[in-house]
Image 1: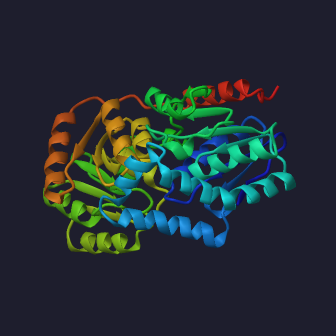
Image 2: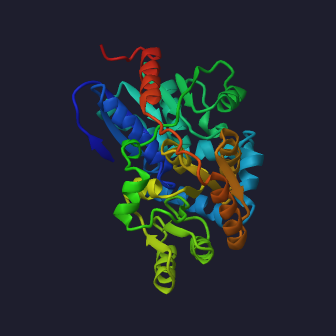
Length: 372
C-alpha cells in the first residue's frame, strides 16, 4: 500500500497491478483529492485477495494473453455479456477481497472508495451492501466498454470517459448514476518541454523525422523489429521497452549495431521523449491520452486483445490516429505515410488539466462530499 498523508477526509483508492494504467488513474485521482484537502491510500485490488489468490489472478490473466485468441474469447463471450464464467470470476475474487477490504475499512474508516480496477469495484459494492451502507463507492473506468465485472448495484457513481461507456454501464445497471469525464493525465505531460527543447535535450536533429515507440509497461509488442524497420527507412526511433527486460536488451543491441535507435527500459522520461517525437506508436491505453495532451499524432498497434480492441476503435474515432498491421515492414510503411501527411502542419494546441479538475469537483458535489 502507498500512503499520501494529508489532513481532511479520507479516500481509499483500489487499483490493480496488471500493467501501469490502473495505477496511473489512481495516482491522478489521488493528486486531485490531495489538492482538495483529502488523505488518500492506494491498495492493489489483487493484494486484497491475499498473496496466493492475488498472484493466481495475475498468472491467469497473463496466461490468457499468452494464447492467441483466448482472451478475446473470454472477453467478448463472457465479460462483455456477463456470462457464467464472468460471474464465477467475480464470486471467486470477492470471496477473498471482501473480508480484507472490510477489515481495512474497519481499522481505517474512509469517506470514499474509488475503484479503478474491476476486482476492487466488485469488492467495494459488496462491502457497502453488506456492512457499510453509508460508504460512498465510486467506480472509475477508462475503457470504452466497461464489462460486467465493472458494474455492480450499490455503486453510487460511475465515472467513464465516453457516452458509449455510459451506455454499456447502464446495460447492466439501468438506474446507474454515470458521469462522462475527461481521461486524467499526469501533470508532467502538461509541463513537458517543447519539441525543440526536447530534441536538444536528447541530442536529436531538428529537421529529421522522429517517432516514439512503446507498448505499455509490459512492452507487449515486437519492439525490436519495429524499431529496426523504422531506423532502416531513416526515422529516428525512441524505443521504450517498459519492464520487458528481454525487449530492452534487444533494443540496446539494435541501437549499438545501427544509428537512429535510442533504447530505454522503464523510464520517467516519457514526457520528454513524446515531446521530441513527431508521432507516437503505441497500444491503446493511457499513452494515447498523454500523446493527445502534447498534440502528437497516434499510430496504434493492435496487440491488446479484448478491451484493447474496443479501446483502439475508440481512439480512431477520436481522430488524429491511425492503425497499422502488426508487421514491422508494414508499420514502417504506414508510419512514413503518416509522417508525410502531418509534415508541415502546425503543432496542435496542448491540452490542459482544467476539465478533469472540474469533473472531480462535480463528482464530489454529487456525492455530497465537496469540502467546504
